[in-house]
Image (cartoon, rainbow, N blue to C red; front, side):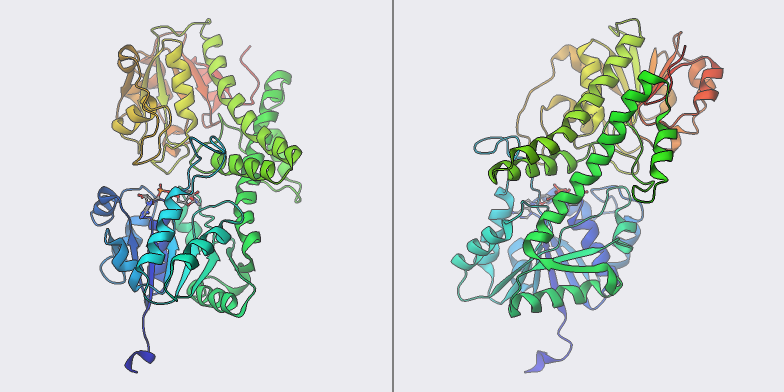
Length: 478
Ligand code: NAD
């Protein structure tokens, strides 16, 4: 036949979100011989991927997309057509926490995954490798295999687990230079061949020793384990920050001294107002649920504490703000600098800023919010909805009309802080380090407070200006 020589491998990715978009853009850039289609049911998302304003903010991403879009990278809502044509189908749909029914509040909701799998089985006319890119519970591949094989018409599907380890804010760099690429598959000839095929994609730019291959269950569980360990580090240092404040120790000094131990290492030891993002809490809850289902309640309890400390850290922060401001923030303007869950992203899913703002609003404060990447719409939505799941709002719980009036969103840090009684720094954006704090102080009510939830300000400098400061895990003002 004619297509034996240089038949272009075709990849399709279902789900054009924070993971699907960047990962596929980098595959397209690094593999000019592979055609990549990223498909999604969300029309606005695909429209944005095809425009000059991408749906997500990620440093370096615009550049990567511009280089390949229209050449070997395509964004489309024609889901079935591209799935049908692909040799490898990545599934990168959202896997949020279930909100009702069995396992509600803990288990992963695999509705989107299941409907993607059924659609793949339905439209496929040739053998395919189906890759779990989403984070899923361990043993999900077994379920996916069942759905595919029971619905296919004599077509061979090989399931691989290839969890994504990118971090938002550094996604492009993480994809260019991954610590590791993990591929899990069946230990059968078909499985091994599928692993080799996927490996050959990553081998375009990832060194061989950084590509790990395992069985399916190890790969699936490793992703949950990695997120649990990362979140645990934050909760560990945050737990220490409370003790630092109580004793006069400085959490930065403690973290530095502890991290110097090469067994522990210096990274990811920053104390903060708490972790956020769409993954840590969801994946730990999922892990807890899996432990409980496997008759391991003690292990479940252990991981639950990571979330409990995170909740404690957020409420501790709010209590500190209110207590410092003479036990009332009623009708006081409080500037919120930073709303995203971390710097260099516009993502606000599960951001601690939501809980902090809600806590302050509950005490009748007026908050004026500034974040360089988050829109007013997004903030109003986050504060209005009880739980928010991208395009699928679940619990609509409107804020009271008076509470809505208590929130303003502005596009400038100086505007946000004007006439405010206090400044809360909730995201570690670089620009917050270099603000003119003298100018901010002069525009504020006195006494003027700074509550630094990310340890970004130079305490000595701002105290000199006249601010009363609280910084997580640091000795308090006399
Ligand atoms: P996301 O919500 O940004 O994107 C998911 C997309 O899938 C949405 O655009 C949605 O419209 C689409 N979708 C859902 N069902 C579909 C269907 N049947 N057909 C076509 N499209 C469909 O989510 P995300 O942040 O990209 O996360 C995706 C997965 O990757 C999750 O399992 C998450 O846990 C995991 N993950 C996320 C990160 C991260 O930093 N965000 C990192 C690693 C892993």
